[in-house]
Image (tube, rainbow, N blue to C red):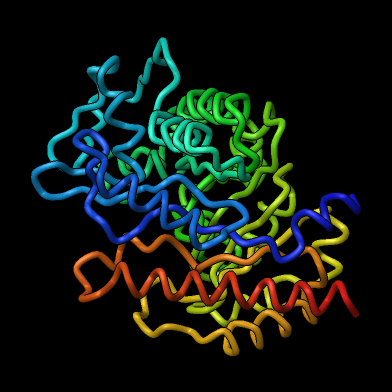
Length: 336
């Protein structure tokens, strides 16, 4: 465990998405730019770029996996940004889905001589299912346990592939859990906590690298119980725009469960650039509350800032200051 603490204490990572239009299927100019800029920032675990699509070429965290899945599943029909579930039966595809962008990223790093640690993100089964018939929340794919479990089995193959391919950290993105587990004492669709835990554990069961689960929004008691009850190494949340989350965990929670906390310390929606001093102050406070089981990251991905004037340059400044603050506090903590 000491090795994990040494390696992960105030390690920096990003969530993945950046405010540049997706061009992965074209010349990859934006993809390559995002990769090189992440390398230059000095992130400890940079994530492969997830870039938002355009109205003519839709792409998002769900379509990245649903599009290839629909190619062998006529029961999944995609029109523009919408995905429709014709039948609850989903056939497992013959090949692993959704990993091409991640593999391109790691090959790019290797071929360019940047032998650094790398992070991959995979959209979780509950969030992915929620995009199926999204317009009707109570009847969307996430309300169907057989759909969720089938997607979990399919995505577990993607996660294992990324771990075997050489990624050092695989993060399961599950923003929909903040909706499902958002109300006190009540879980949407009447799922039990163990059903959620079992399907999350399925994705990380065969990983040989670090695992994380990202849930944005407020950390409710149910979110906390599910994540601490899972086998994941790192629980990942936003704190810059959700200050109440500071009260969600304490040092004993993390120590007892053997978890690390990825601490969102810069806003992914506010264009204000947090100074090194602002971020440093927040990290010192976080160490006082959570102890040394702490990683440093933005709240969420920055794809939602696309269209904001100067968004990409703003994001670069935010991440640069975040990396500088983490290095300063880590040096101070280790030296004390």
